[in-house]
Structure formats: structure tokens, C-alpha cells
Image 1 (tube, rainbow, N blue to C red):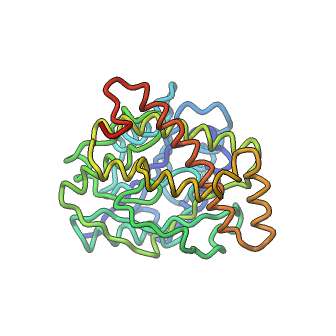
Image 2: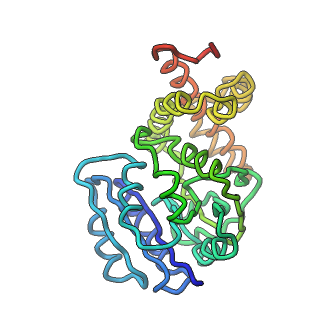
Image 3: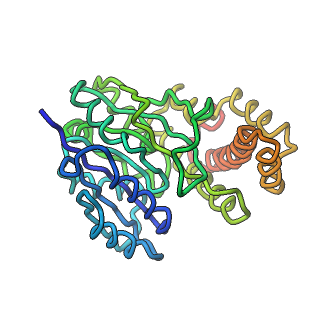
Length: 311
């Protein structure tokens, strides 16, 4: 039996990036009549509508726009699209991800070969709009995550069984891990294919982009405690990176405090010029994680009955 796929792509104020995302999704090796793209606009205020309407006219496959008048956050946007989807398999692609030509065919093949599976593939960092697939993945791109909405697929019937995303995790953070816990409890097997590759676009670090990244980390810290209240386990605590080990690792990642928001941009540029971009990624990740952990601790201390200190 040939399965069909519905790609779920939520977006908000990423018009230019979304245009490239849709370009690559419409150029898949999978037959155009076997998949659709559902773009959920979460109340954007930029040129997103123009971009999506152009894709509707020009794409090889069906592009179905869904417009939200008020912001619902990523989990709410995804849920709205899932309820409207026609495909047998739901594939998650964020609007800052670019799909290699084999991406959808590989995900559909996973579910045709394994009726009870969660499909996974690599997520490779790229900084190129025009040639995103020229970069080769490295050790920093490897993941053992069971379910990650950056690159994952699951049969619609299994989503119906466990329920959709929990919209309490709004606007951002941990909704994918929460859903993954429920899918794993259903007994689904994680199946990984290298040719189901997505390329995650990261713009060059600038004061503006760094501010946006730090804001996302603060949002992720707020919803982290909602996640831990729902899953008060050691596994969840490790996922939140709130253990003495993770705190020590973050200190080392920032060269014991020598790298911070004020100089990380210069450090990343130095690492790129020196031919060690991986070091720049580690340093930037350390600064972002420190911001997340600081907000995580502050939010935990303010919550009634907080488990911030393991009590």
C-alpha cells in the first residue's frame, strides 16, 4: 500500500526563510500527488501571506495555507494543521528547515516498512539559502533523540491515539518531547534514516539575531517547568539539563565565564576565520544554555511547591 504524507509547517514572521523552505519541499523526489504541505501562519505581520500564496500557485504539490488571526503558539498551530491534514503520515518541518530531495520519500518509506514507527532523520546546520545541502554533517549534528519536531514523522492514526500536542507549552518549548513520551509509551519504534535529512538554517550571529535567540531560551525556560510538573522524573530532569552535571558542563562550555552575550559574536567570528566553526557553535550554545539555565532557576524558585532544588 502506498502511503501519502502531510507536511506540517508552522510559521511566524519568517517570510524570506519560509519561501526557501517551501521551495525545497516542492522539489521532493516523492511524487507530487502523494504529499501536501500545510502552512500554518501563526498571525504573522510580515510578507508571509504573499509568500504562501505564491507557493500555492507555483508548487508541484498541493500547498494548503491555514491562517490564524490570533497567535496560538507552535503547538496550537501544529494541532490546527494536523486536524486539517489528509495524509496517512504526518511529517514535521519547521519553516527554518530545508528538506533534501530524498527527505519525504525516506520518511514515507519508513512507515511503509514499519507500521509502528516514529520516523527520524539527521538535522544538519547550514548557513546557506542557495546551497544548503553543500555542507556535510558532523559530530555536532548527531542526535539520539527519540522524537524531535525539527525532523520527525508519525502515522496520523498514532497521533489520534495519544492525542496531539499539549498547548500548555505555548508559545514554544518541550511540546515535542512531551508528545514523544506519549508515542514511546504506545510502543512505537524509532526508525532513523540518513537520507531523511533536513538542513537547519542558522543566520550569522549578530546583535539582532542573538537577541532573538536569547528570547527563545527564556521562553523555553518558562515552559520547562510546565514540562517537569507533567513529567516529574529523572529522565525529564536530564532532558531539561537541570542537574549538577549540566550546570558544570555549561560553565566549561563558556570557558569558565570568559564567553558571554557581550563577546560571543566576536568569538564565533574568530572561530570561523580560524577554520574551526564547530568551536563557535559550542561557545554560542554555551551562552544560550546559560541564559536558559538562569531563567530556569529563577522561574523554578518563583513557582509554588517548586522542585528547583530537588525537594
